[in-house]
Length: 170
Image 1 (cartoon, rainbow, N blue to C red):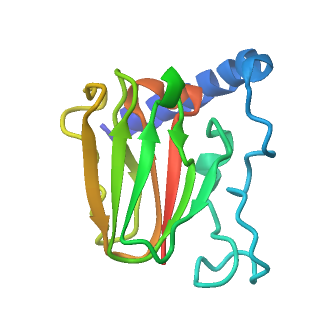
Image 2 (cartoon, helix red, strand yellow):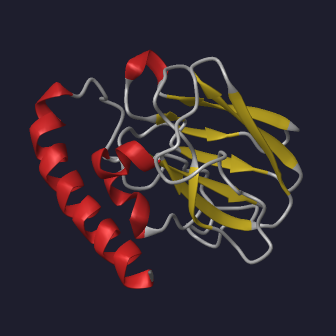
């Protein structure tokens, strides 16, 4: 089973690279290079602590979009799923404090939220159902993240297109 998952992720990554090349000319995103989540606050650049930019894993290197939000200090925050019918989470990169509730609001149909990685004890279970089980437009999936660290997630049907996101819980 593990080999099947690895093979699927490898093939999905290859498909994502091919799709990214095709879609590159269609992108309306002009806010940066997509690599670091866009947060720069003059800190030490990568410990994921209260200073500096989180160290985002390479899994997010091909994520569609480059939107980021530093929502530390807020008890609740929203991530748009598929805004304007696009295969993207908005924001892609999110920073929150431990105990923050993250609401994934489905703005278009045929998407889901599935955990790719999370810290030990993390509570990001993702939306109900299997890998390809989709959530209806207008629905919300909410999770309160207590465990500090970096969480990554994706849309099962659209992972190969780069529909991925990350949350740094501090």
